[in-house]
Amino acid sequence: MKYDAIVIGAGVGGLAAALKLSASGKKVLVIERQPIPGGCATAFTRKGFTFESAMHCIGTLGPDGEVRSFLEEFGIDKMVDFIELKDFCRIIYPEHDFVVDFSKENFLNFLKEKFPQECQNIDKLFLRLDKFYKQFDNFCLSKLPLVLQLILSPLIYPEIIKLSSLTVAELLGKYLKDEKIKSIIADLWRFVGVPPSALSAFYFLIILRAYYFEKTCYVKGGYSQLFRKIAKKIEENGSEIKYNTAVKTIVTEKNRVKGVITDKGEEFFAKTIISNANAIETLSELIDNAGIREKYSNEITSLEKSVSVFQVYLGLTVPAKTLGMRNFMISLNTSYDHDKSFRDSISAERDNCLIEIVDHAQLDSSLAPQGKGTLLIMTFDSYKNWEGLTDEEYRQKKKSLADKLIKRAEKLLPGLSQRIELMEVATPKTMYRYTLSPEGAIYGFAHSVKQSGIFRLSQETCIKGLFLAGAWTRPGAGVHACFISGLDAAELALKRK
Ligand SMILES: Cc1cc2nc3c(=O)[nH]c(=O)nc-3n(C[C@H](O)[C@H](O)[C@H](O)COP(=O)(O)OP(=O)(O)OC[C@H]3O[C@@H](n4cnc5c(N)ncnc54)[C@H](O)[C@@H]3O)c2cc1C
Image 1 (cartoon, rainbow, N blue to C red):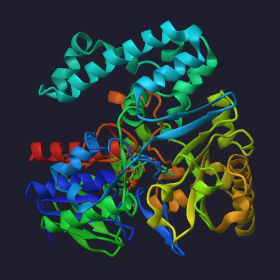
Image 2: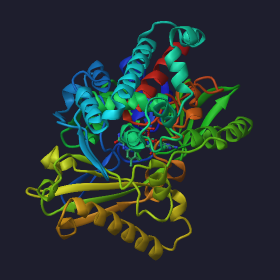
Image 3: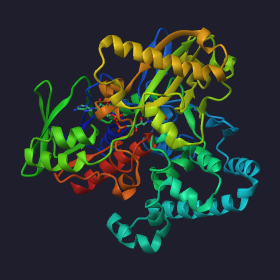
Image 4: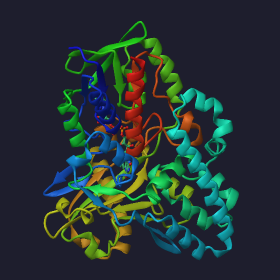
């Protein structure tokens, strides 16, 4: 069978690419190994409790947000119901406890009230950030070709250039003295999984504005509804989605894509292939040309993968709100030292790891049976912690770490352990099993300075007609970025035809 384009994987990047191509009149075939769309952004239901498999919060889904505008462009916004969030997160440190409510003014007032000696420095820092955001917006809106923009960037976007070479710790260190205020401002590192000492300031600032200062929404029935509706729209546009099917080979001829072969031995042909499968699998396993696979393997094995995650999903006999969960999301820190929290998360220890607690049923009570609630408790983790265990050891380790996290959450939510009706646990191995992401990495390549912005793996490959979309490529991880990635990959494909 012949198509205009084949998209491998129906994660966010793959769906966004297929949506744009199909809306442009192209006949697209999406091939997804799972039975449902969404990739990481799916949900599962147990005994009437519905859980987000991965997603905690999607930014810029509010009426003026960028992801919402993408949905509007393709008419998806009319297919789901949005629930406005009243705040983003309650953030707890040993000596500070505050709520980020999308108001920059409130955030700055909090910082100035708690750190009066840093008032002027806070103003200077945020003036610098404003300058960066202005240049970044101009960069995004510019109609100049990317190559020209990059050549001219030292002249027209000096702030982007400067901040692209800094870590978050270096940026904050230029303005602030108190280690505690630096940690508080950097709290959002947990949405990228790289501690501030290594995290790209460029990527951090983009997500900081999107999550902290732009209103966003939840989706009735769960975020997965959004991705189901996008899949529906792709089919309504005359394209096809094949589930339960994995691509095994990308067939090339004279350095151009020709088609794919699936695990069922079917062959499909197209001059454009957009791969939303992870970049390592795509470039070093799927391509049929051994020389190209080897070239990419060498390049890609030197890149650092992001962290993985450990998640506990709880079905509660009461809404979590009745236990004291006043906000839908809590970031709980036992220390101001994020490097230590990160090390603790990926070591076997976990006594001081960061934990995040999320109550989606607080936003949409239909996610739990009437009068009941849900809760998600998450910390970072490393695949290495789960290797070489027998089934029994694996089961016991899961239970013991889950109990540890529940105990910590219980200090904040008294009585929690007595209210658990159902528990499911996901480890880095689970992350790998569902997405094939190497070592269960949840954010593609780590967002260090060297792997963010223009340094991130390009969406274009050395094979004509083969493009990448998703967290491993530009602009990076998170639903917002993966949407952009998919749309950009489609745009590149449309231009190259
Ligand atoms: C635990 C966790 C929490 C997160 N929290 C948030 C959050 O709160 N907010 C946020 O914005 N982001 C969050 N993220 C990140 C976000 O989920 C991801 O960045 C994003 O969903 C990745 O999308 P993607 O396009 O890269 O595709 P993926 O989700 O990686 O999907 C790729 C798809 O390709 C399929 N596939 C792979 N190989 C093949 C093959 N050979 N043939 C066919 N199909 C194949 C897979 O089955 C999968 O469906 C979180 C991630 C995790 C794991």
